[in-house]
Length: 465
Ligand SMILES: *Cc1c(COP(=O)(O)O)cnc(C)c1O
Image 1 (cartoon, helix red, strand yellow):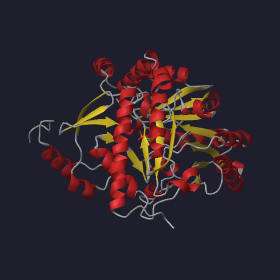
Image 2 (cartoon, protein in one colour):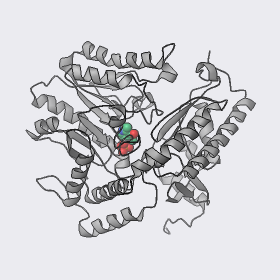
Image 3 (spheres, protein in one colour):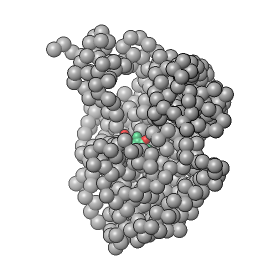
Image 4 (cartoon, protein in one colour):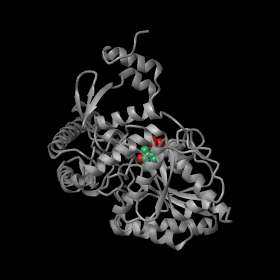
């Protein structure tokens, strides 16, 4: 068997991929028939495929490549660290410099008394840690009944059994025996789809109050924590009404429960601050981090823990950890990523240059006949496709059909934009320039035009009854 290189014809790579590689969140048979797109290299905000196309990545990979592709500093750091100390664990009373330095830096960046980091290899693993940690915290405090974690429908917290159960994705729960017991899901603050006749402000409060109802129903003495993304990402960039988080915070403060902010997408600049909790005014006891922590250059995640929880957990032995917790190469690369974010003032670029341009471009799409609403916070936005702009109508056909068609038209126009049912979402690298944002907008509008024409031709613009 010859080496598998970029020089094989695309069709051969696709055939090998179909024969041996099982893809996440993919209908394998369908993909095998069609052939996967083969990405061969990337630079800044552009991907290049095996047919030579230049594709604008409006998603920063999977919401993670915050500093953009092709930063050789991170490659150099990785090579240096691999030569010096490629691996050692942090079990058994041992540590190493990359883990120490990264934990210190994260503690410095995190708000309030979030001063302690438990490392994982991914966001899923970190949320599994959180689930066990909050339950262990209450057990050590002499309240072993405080076990239930409240989460939200359509939340995404990862794909392991624990984190997938914390999440609220019905399609995931339908496979493999999830959710596990002890997790309660309340409704999401998605005003566009579920707000009915309420104003966004009324709706935000009413959805937050479901947390209080759930606490009272299951008993404060049985609740360990509430977990939520500041802004739901994979659920379709659902930006809650402004009234939502203050009411959630009030309820968490009133009852004795821990608040976990899943910052895997919102963290490290995505919302215009270091953490989404700062943008949305949330004071969590624990934050989940991954993705932007290393800009995706290495797999690493973790939990940032407040003083009180860390102290209680430290009073006993926490029987939990991963072989790659604080992996030295991943930690060194993440540290270099944070250095670049900080020393190159990427957050200033976001606030003063990229955000204004991106928001103007994105809201400019609102006049399109297929677009019902455009929403955006920082560098993450979404738009709703609708057959009828005036009354937030859904399509009569199966949810996600129009979104899938629009995503196909984006691909055809060399733009990566994802769809979540009939919402289109963007989350570009933070270093995107105004010219690149204009190009993103031009391609997005072409895709919307083509999708609209297809829907019209196919007589598919019928609103649901
Ligand atoms: C992606 C994501 C996760 C899971 O992270 P992985 O690294 O894929 O395990 C958890 N929470 C949120 C909010 C995410 O977006």
